[in-house]
Image 1 (spheres, rainbow, N blue to C red):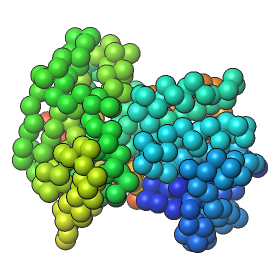
Image 2 (cartoon, rainbow, N blue to C red):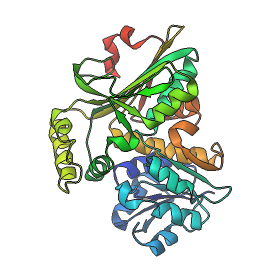
Image 3 (cartoon, one colour):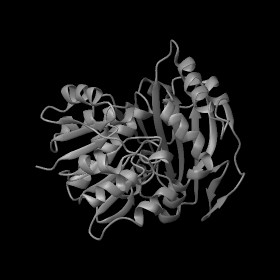
Image 4 (cartoon, rainbow, N blue to C red):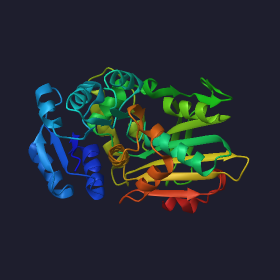
Length: 358
């Protein structure tokens, strides 16, 4: 039976991945991190028959011991800019396939240069990037005549310090371009403006929608020959939104994490992906909701591991949201506890606000 190694397996993302993998039971799970007692707790909770192993992503020998005997290694450790290719290098040296919950285009290129012939590496297996590319492809599969997409991603969520550090250090420009839109076969810079106090179906409260064209969405628009694709990062909390600056400031990640906690005080945490596809037909709107970005990221990373083990992903280097079968993957995510997938065969403007119950 295939052994799965999860590095960073007891953090918010890693624990969500272990829980999903434990439910699917594709093989014994090895949960690793610098605190083996914390790893042991998630093994006892979600991975019967698994094992907890100490591992330090800064120590190549520790990583080599952890990867030995695994069929696939999933990296959920962070911040991604500090981990770099260290886990991938150890996985390949041990003969493993590799999945990373994170990954911008620069890391994709670096890992792509390391992948041995016949081996598979899948990056960007998170909520965004990741599921934020899968769901538009799912909408296009349901509405193949669609020529226009509108995407909303976000909610009222918690930034862990690791997530905050990754977000602030990488910067939005690493993954795409703010205010840009895809139109008539090309990216148009500065074409859109931020929408404040926007009221959107599926979102249970007014939100700020900031235009942001991710690189993954630009590729999807180009490959599908879309007339137009506009995408928005959505924030329900004002404090986290105000704390998004501070690139290069060592304390900025702490401020962003603290601001997100204040935004959550007395409020329900959630993360949403909403996609509208329109064209010659009636159009379709799809929505995917979880208890937070970490939960959706862990679930999507686990699903990517499952598909790699099943042989559904070819050899080479891939972005998860652009390589997995969109129908199989979306349906599998929607079947998980704590995640809901909704499909409405109407454009977003015609979706009733009772859909907010999602």
